[in-house]
Image 1 (cartoon, rainbow, N blue to C red):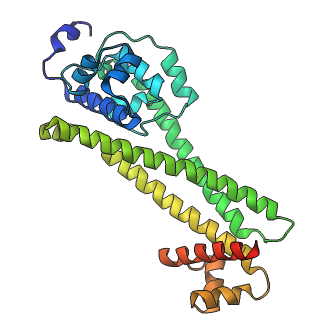
Image 2 (image 1 turned 120 degrees about the vertical axis):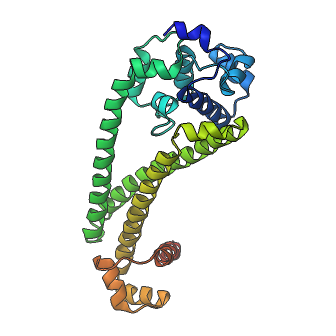
Image 3 (image 1 turned 180 degrees about the vertical axis):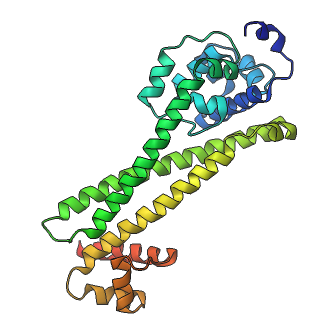
Length: 285
């Protein structure tokens, strides 16, 4: 691998190494660093950062490791463009990074040789955890739907709703972060002016879009269930179900069907239900 170092300078880089350079540029812009400021923190010069971002020279593994640790960047995403750009302090990832001592080798080749298998296992574990998370969220919303909304169990309802809200906020933050960083990656491609590079290698864009779509679908389902749980709590009082039907301009049996889970309200109706819940909350204050 060392023999590659002298010969790779100013020669065309492999497609994978060029994509790594663009991803570094994307994170640098996302975090708001100037090239000189990032170089200072990484122990290299502004010109070296510029050469890396322009894919004139490869990002070396020792610099990449400092970069990942400093900005909480996922080495898997940096190397392959896969998964979330940030590892969010994951102890497993941090453990892998802290046990290696990379030299001045091109990061992509070094990663595959040194950490590739370890991260393949982490990806498989993360996939299993995502399946478990979806199951836990589904179970939580089902519990909310099945609870009798009385003063006695209201504390349990609120705990379930708080847990769901926390998970939803974390998922939304991750989605927003992925979208913004992907935009910076795309901008780096435009800046480079090379359409050939874009054809040679599939970056994280398609995978991020697919995972974002999955998250959005899950969040819509969970949010709807939470709204319906709030509605159930409110209409348990006498006359409130009829008031809801009148406010929405729908037959009362339709409201009963929503609450029983026989039919799901449309997106527009779900928004109206959420506004109705919010309005009732204001009235009660």
